Length: 267
Image (cartoon, rainbow, N blue to C red; front, side):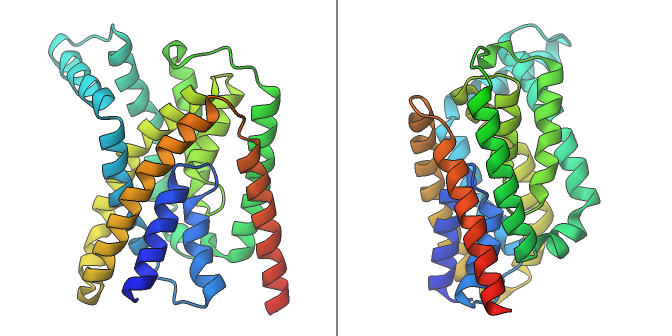
């Protein structure tokens, strides 16, 4: 892989990680459309180091509060405050995705990365995101989350193992179906990305480190992913405070149609 390719993939990953348009789809489709060698899931996961740093920095005040709340839970052995409950919600929401990732890891690296499956997932989840956002009310702020809400959103994260579904897309869609307002659905989705992303990085980094010739491209890719991830979070939260998720749903459907057209044109 060249430095230029790593830079492009880093920018693509960062810009699409937190938008509900599927970073995994864009990372698997970019090499396919440009005729590059697919770097594989391990490299894709490594790029998430940049996104992980971005989400930790952007929500640093929230993470400090959540860390203190976690310490309070351990010391008092009970859950009382809003922050303490949010810690438990994040843990609960992470469990389904972690189990799914371990059970489906092999498929996620092979058959799930098929371009036609990615295209179909883009379209289907785009329609689901549009419907959830269009027909669900915004009556529930993040402070009204309950155990069942966190579990449902966590289960929705499992299907994001298929490129094209989108982790943020599936969890935001679930949040909107549960009638959380647009910003609350996005914020919880971003916060819950941290533990699952960190676990995936720990699991896959040895595979990337083993490829010594990937060091410089990886560094460039991670830096690009971090900067563009921070930008994506900032833009999305400002955008959904005044607009719907409709534009992202439309983009997903159009991209899926384009990919299907390219697949059949190359057949």
